[in-house]
Image (cartoon, rainbow, N blue to C red; front, side):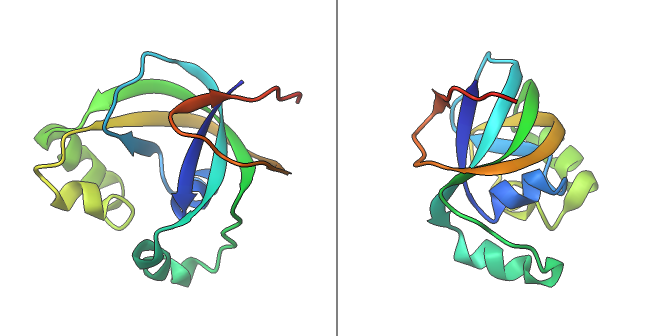
Length: 130
């Protein structure tokens, strides 16, 4: 199954249903199930912004399963849509109007029993059994 490695707190925010889009500078044609891997990297400023949620932010493990259903170009219209969805979660994308990238739409998110593993760049494969 495909896997994407994401820094914390973003991986947990996806697993808990707060974040529907994951952002990259590259687009993907892949649609289907994907595992969410919480990488060892931590966005400390963002972690502080979400401390009021009292969530755990594990690192170095696969924590959820989702489905990539779309890949959108981030433009002014997308920023407006993201602002309406959750301005706190998408603040950095909304504010950086010069950032040129894509948002992967994640649906059907389910937490799974954690799997300790090192992450990789881009989309990578893992032999996952439900």
